[in-house]
Image 1: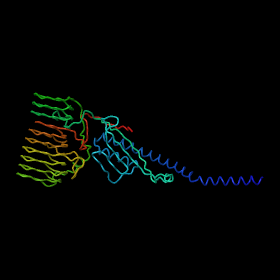
Image 2: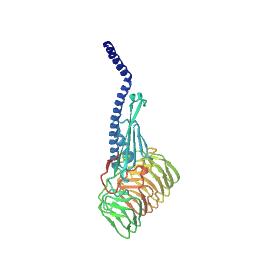
Image 3: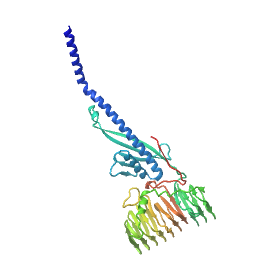
Image 4: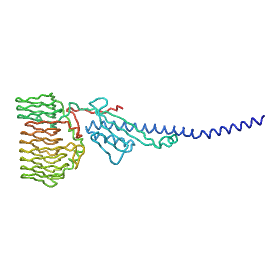
Amino acid sequence: MHCHLRSFRLNRKGVVALWVAVAAPALLASVGAGVQVGQYAVARGELQVASDAAAYAGARALGASGNAQTAANVAANVAEVNGVAGSASRSWVPASKTLTDNRIQVTIGPGVTSSANTAVTVTVSRSINGAFALLLGGAATQTITATSTADSVPGATGGQPCLLALGTSADALSMSGTTDVTAHNCNLRSNGGLQMSGSGTINVPAVYTGGSISTSGSVRITGDQNQNAGTITDPFLSYAPLQAALAGLKPGSGTAFRLTGSGGGTISPGTYSSISVSGSQTLTMSPGLYVVNGNISFSGSGQLVGSGVTIISSGSINISGSSSINLSAPNSQTTGGGVPGVLYASTSTSASTVSGSTGMPVSGLVYTPNASMTFTGSSGVSGCTEVVALKIRMTGSSSTEANCAVYGLPQYGSVAGSAAARLVR
């Protein structure tokens, strides 16, 4: 009897050992799966921190620059700093406002908490070796993702200006004679005052001035008048593509381009010391960047045409006579080095003038922050056009519109304020 009991105990140990051997793979897989789940949780937590920080930074950058692509690049930079794999080059799709950078995707879209806001959504991902998951029938590599969205809350108010006089003098923005100015869905803004005389009309949603609004004669302003509304800073100082192009100017360098008489000609992007066209010539400007280290003049009865054109100058531009101008700035898909949204920009302190019976249907930004821009006679601007100058003088009929979002130009308000960012999901 005693022997049988001893034999039973020995046999039971063998049975336990057998069951342990049988169960070992399952136990190992279970422990491994637990370790794998822990790895996933850690990775997901790290990615969530990275996406949160990137979305918030992108929203802050959007509020500061007003430029979607700039904000997307800032968000991608922050994601990379937080350990998300980027690439040597990034792709930007203007139509969808989406940036792709290897494991990082940034999209600029409608605000979440308010239609007045703009949302920055960042999605980041990381691949993890799923060896233990493979034992259980899963994939060898698992992809972990995290997504965050932050709203960029605009600080500036009062709506987008389409005419902005940066100077603070009493006549920083002035209109005389039979001037009729119509601004479609945009305002007039002067850091100084507005002086208007004669019999003209300003038909705009609102006028904002840092000083006073002074009128004489039978002039009429149909929109809201907001005097002593402070000043706003030059919104294009933070527009990096424009400032980089202006920094490349070297006064006096390049070759002179001159076209006279009748007929036509074509000019290609490049560096010029001056550009002069007179007579009845038709000059076609090929798409791209024109660096003019001097003055530009266009007179007579000719035509100046071109699309996808950016002109950067260290001098002034003067257009007179009965010439016809039809130019448009590059969109975000630039060719030849053109700056998105910028048609003409100058660092000069010399005044520029568009006068005579010139018609000027242009699309893009006209930017002379250090000098006055004057439109006289029957000249005018129409379409998607913004004028930013130290002083703006207008006589005649003009039409402006600042609905230029397609170009990616900075969007800003007529009254200064501090932009904010809120992480919303």
